[in-house]
Image 1: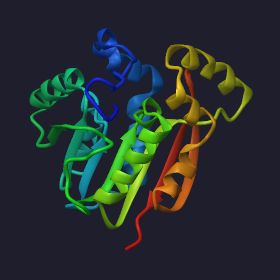
Image 2 (image 1 turned 45 degrees about the vertical axis):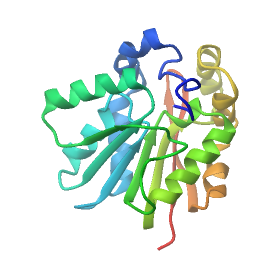
Image 3 (image 1 turned 90 degrees about the vertical axis):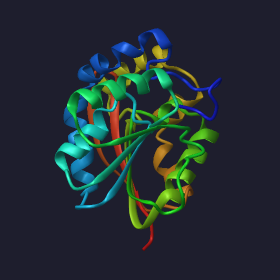
Image 4 (image 1 turned 90 degrees about the horizontal axis):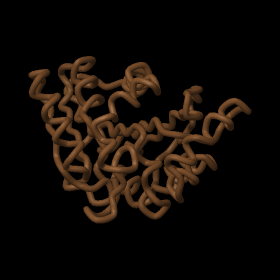
Length: 218
């Protein structure tokens, strides 16, 4: 995810690893943590839900299965991973919408979603891109809406510091460094969200997975 086709970072850092994304997700415990993310979002019937950086479509499908009356849209800038998502959605026969576009310039009108969810996406973005993406998430959320994030956070114990070392080597750079410093909650608050809180920290083979949420006044 990034601002332009030339600049975006593929899901696993390089294009040739993209087909392995779901396998890596299994190692992280993707199904369990995404179910937690959806539960925390408290999605109501007919809520409009955006998965920001939808990747292979796992989260959009999960939201629709758990909340069948919600209207679910996914967006990602990477056409390679979107091809995988569309194939998965066709096989599932589930009614969700997938669009190609950038997190930093969303192709949606103001206030059209009730929930924005994003998982393991923001760490790919530079701090400037994070600010732009979070501002866009705030813009497209309706009054009373909420943002729910699951992404790498500051290691919360010695074991997670050791685990995050491999992640730093594999996916280093400004974007992950900001996450590992614990910058996400402050950046979310800076974007205009209220009651921002890091609600949980989970241990994974790659470091601390942080859950952060914020709400829009309404």
